[in-house]
Length: 123
Length: 123
DNA sequence: CAGCATCCAGCACGATACTG
DNA sequence: CAGTATCGTGCTGGATGCTG
Image (tube, rainbow over all chains, first blue to last red; front, side, top):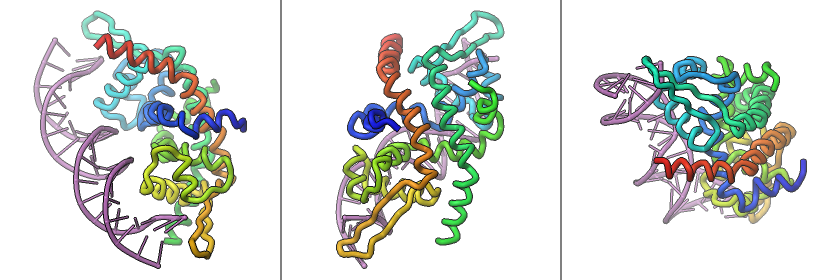
């Protein structure tokens, strides 16, 4: 692991960095970005494909992603209204690291689960 | 991007996965793991090297990491007491994906910042 | 030194109801 | 269809003070 990056996540640049990491790593962001990796989706389609998200949180998270320039929001002037969400190049570039982290979680989930149970017994 | 992993983060395996991601991606976990990449550190050393963390959150986060088997906690029977924290192999394996995400955040921080300001002006 | 206990503010999030 | 508005709650996380 190269020390340059290690320095960047630690030390003091961390302050501003942490704010962005918090934003990205929150409850729904990674899930929505990963879902939009399929391509353009409408509000309701996202609502169905992201399991367990409420309408409210979907709206809020999408607004934040739009504000940060990770997705585009396209309103079609029709009746009934149609709004489509898609990843920007920046948003797409998040897919790789997001999947790296998700892959890690999937790989180590059993071990973590086991470790938790062992810990629970000891206490 | 391979579709296999995309499926795993989305869909329905997401439920259990999301719980672990939430744990890992919280406010301090990645920062502490990255800091421990240097090697074994004591409580106070961590307290100083992780900027802005409170004693309370450092303790809580370390306990969770220990419970999940990502770090070891070694108490030396001395006066004054000395407690040392170090990454387990599982913990070390988290460094790579963590840095991938941190690297992304560092790379795109200026763009995100700019996008936010542009958005603020529009509203 | 390395913590635990306590109190408290803020907001993340869900549930529900209403709208252009 | 794609939201907004409002209410209520539990958790996050900081501040402070005390212990072995």
